[in-house]
Structure formats: structure tokens, C-alpha cells
Image (cartoon, rainbow, N blue to C red):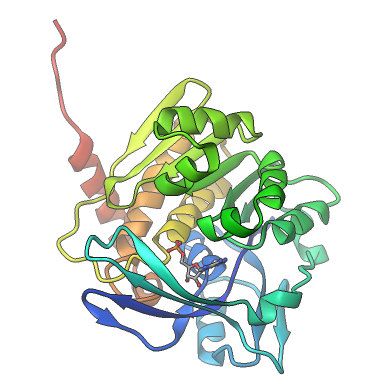
Length: 307
Ligand code: AMP
């Protein structure tokens, strides 16, 4: 059974207070697929790339159990390109360029080999395309999660609301949660977003961790305080990939198991930001992940006597 992840496979140009990159591989699907591949195989991305997408990068993804049945290659066109610049706090950024390129005419196709999917992640992508992917499953996957961003809220809100209705869980960052709900309080925002359809909402707060909401239940996961953060690009997608990878591995969608999944997502995101682009996601080992999960346990474990 495959774990299907749709989203962008892109070239990014990133500027942070600590450095600048030329075009490097990025994209919501790329980060999520790398992250999930540490927990589940096979990963089946549904994405589109141009003829310019580096063959070495394709081989590296295949070597991690990421399959290419659902990836369309438009030989004579350019891959999606995004450029962003981070502010001094590294939590906020400005988008400088979004060139849709191959994405402009992308018509995602879910191959027959993906029809048995139980867990589907709709990574950040045009909301209508996210819907197109759901509609192609003859049997609805058991659990569908989606990510999005302010860009789509600004230009495609009605489509986005339609996609939100169709999923079980949505991930947004704090600013996006506020934009989507018109509420400052994240608790009120989560309630309003749950009323739009999803039974679960995750609100990511960058270096301040993430909140999981379900009905009246709330779980708070920390982010690991790191000495050096080089590039937060893809942290959200990496978080989501680790989260869905764990759910697919355990086949357990209870709130208790989602608490573990959110910690795993946070651990994976903590690796992602340590180097530029996908570099760190390619080199970590299971031992690295285990050690980091232990750091998370130490970070939040305390005894208290309540009189
Ligand atoms: P994140 O830092 O988790 O928000 O994800 C950053 C990644 O999202 C980058 O690698 C970009 O290529 C990709 N990206 C940026 N803008 C968009 C967009 N409008 N739609 C889909 N993917 C995007």
C-alpha cells in the first residue's frame, strides 16, 4: 500500500541572514516525501517537473524509496520556481518570486499503482489540483491531510474552502490560521477551521512548536531549541511528511497516536532547518532520528506533585 503525497517539486532560491543559495531543489512534495520516507515505503508523489529537474536529484529520491509512477515530466518546460527571503527572526519571510511554469497546465493523474492508498497527503499546491487528486480515487483514502499557504488564501480562497471541506486534517501556520478564520486566538481559529470540515487541525508555530486540535482536545508539541538554524524552508512540509509517515506506518489515527506523530514531525523539521534546502534530509540516519526523539522526551518530561 503506497503513501501518496502531492505537492510541488521545485527549484528554490533562498536568502536568510546567514547566506544565500542559487537554484536548489525544493518544493512541498519533495520535502514531505523525503521526510516520510524514513517511516514508510513506498512513497508515491503526484507532481510535475520540467526537463530542467536534475537527474541526480531524481536518483537520490528513488534511492530513498520514493517512486516516480505519478510524476509527470514536461521535457520542454521549466520546473516550478520559488524564491524567498527570511527576516532576522527566521520565522517570517517574504516571497520574492513564484513562477508556476509547469504547474500552470498541470493536470495531476493518480496512477493505478496508487489506488490502494490509505493515507493521502495533499501538500501545498493549487487547491483545485488538490481536489482533482482526491476525486481520482475510486475508494476514498482512509485519512486525508492537507497543507496550504497564504498565497492560495490570497488568490483562490473559494477553491481552498472547497478542498478544506474534503479532508480529515489540515495543517496551517499561525498566521494562516488567523487569516483563514479571522480570529486572533488560535483556539478560536482552530474551532472555526474544524467547523469548515476537518476533524483535526494542526497549527504550526515555527520555532515555538505546534498545536494539535480535535474537538475540545488540544496537544502542544515543542520545537527543539537549536543553536543554529540555517534555512527554515521546507520545515512545514518536512513536519507534515514525518507526521503522515508515522500514521501510515502505524495505521493508527487515534488522537494518542497523533501526539506521537506530531513529535516525530517536529523532530524531522528540526533536522531540515540545520542546512540549506533538502541537504540534511538526505543524510540523516535512523540513529539520528532516535537520538533526537530522546531529546524531545527530555525536553518536555517533568514531575510535579499536585496537592
Ligand atoms: P515551507 O517552508 O514548508 O512553507 O515550504 C517551502 C517550499 O514550498 C519551497 O520549497 C517552495 O518550493 C514551495 N512553495 C512555495 N510557494 C509555493 C506555492 N505557492 N505552492 C506550492 N509550493 C510552494
